[in-house]
Amino acid sequence: MRKTLPILFFLVLVLLFANNPIMASGGTIRIAGFSEPGNLNTVVWPTRSDRDLTDLIYSQLIRANVELEWEPHLAKSWEVSEDGRTYTFFLHENVKWHDGEPFTASDVAFTFKTLAHPEYDYGFTNRVMPIVGAEEFRAGETDVFEGINVIDDYTISFTTNEPHAPFLANLFLGILPEHILGDISPAEWPRHRTNRAPIGTGPFKFVNWEDGQYIELEANKDFFLGEPKVDRIFYRFGDGNAMLSAFINREIDITQVPLAEVDSVKNLQYAELKLASLMTQFYIGLNVRNDHFSQQIVRQAMAYAMNKPLYVDSVLGEFGQVSHDVFPAGHWSSSPNVRQYDYNPEKAEELIQEAGYTKNRQGIYERSDVGELTFTIMVPTGNKEREDTAVLVKQDFDAIGIRTELQYLDFPTLVTHLLPRDRDGRQREVTEDDYDCFILGYGVDTDPDVYRPYFHSSFMPPNGYNFIGYSDPHMDELFDKQFQTIDFEDRQQIFWEIGEKISEELPWITMYIQKYAYVNNARVSGFDPDFRGITFNKPWEWSIE
Image (spheres, rainbow, N blue to C red):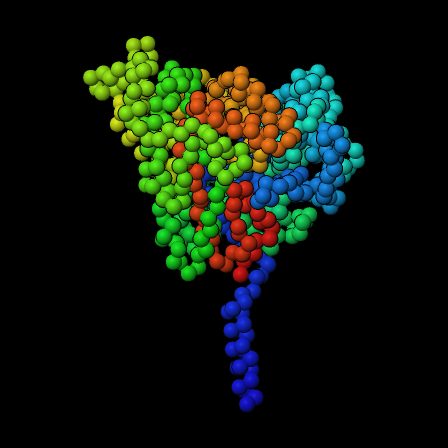
């Protein structure tokens, strides 16, 4: 009997822990990314791949929850003045940079002042221009940014020229270390060592970057919200199918799953499949400087030529939805009244002919002053659904007499066409010769004001993301008006008008929105991707069974 009791006790323990696995601290999680990051500075043209890493390395003043409501992060709390113009933030006092230096309000002030620095040209200047004194600071007329006030080490205020509806959203940005970058001109930041070896205040510290292979991070044991539960994260890059194979071989723990391969992982005993909608539209962006695309009637013809339901059925299935609005369906900014372009190749050819084109002997539409209606579609690699969609788009255009070519290239290379640089490495204006069109995804991140740099005429590169070259005075007025409109319903109506106007003029031709499928090894607990990203949802609480 004495020998039996220990055996029974052991069996009870086995059964207990089989049903209630132990969540141990420590261990390593390996994440797959389809594209290698371009840089790890939060304010230098960040891509989705960049943000997967910077969300782990840096902290923000405030963060959005899944309902797009703002919550404290580096700030413990904040207050807004009665006139709606001054925002005062009270910061955590126990925050350290990864090199051990203390974090203070001066770092916050430095980060946002830099966005208006005369030598900063990397896409975020519009976020601080509503602040008092921004224009004078940007013009180099003064070294004092009047509307950003460091009250003490842990208190900072921002004062805007007038009430500004998306102002909190403008402050959603990884804060940078003044003690490292403070003496470096922003013009040098793309080449600074911190792009490859960043210092942040986030839950994980940078360790190593092996080109073309992975980035290694380790737990920040001094993280102000508590020491992360895992010791180390490896972020690997590679083709989506290769990364899925690596997951199946248990070489990585988390990856996005090409939709065509979802069934192949559903029955893996060690896998957990999770779906997330990133509120992202996939669209064709047109360089309207192009002689063909400068004509609205041609852009509309292209939209009629595209069989969007087929794209969804063939490429996405249950994970996709046809889209006609640049703002994602389900978000309050999406209008129910946008113009729709149902698949109609006959209508497409009718409009092309109305624009003065006739078919030549090769069956290609041409016009004497602009030549053949031919162009190249640039397709960034790494997303199989996007690559497969591009093939179908080409087939639709070719079928009606528009000659197209597909050019596949990695995302950093695509960026060199959309945001070109001169011989000195500075951003320059985009020309007709830089590219014809491209397929990308974009959507609401925090507030729909994020679309303004893509469609407002004052944000042409090198001063923003309007690389398509779209310019319309009324559109500028609408975007300017919405951020001055505090009443929600009034602001919603403005965005509906913006979406309706874009769907009429079509500098972007939207195709569909989709859900993303992710899979994680069941040993990883806490991984919960959503539209904010795969590494955004409290990664310091991830753990391993």
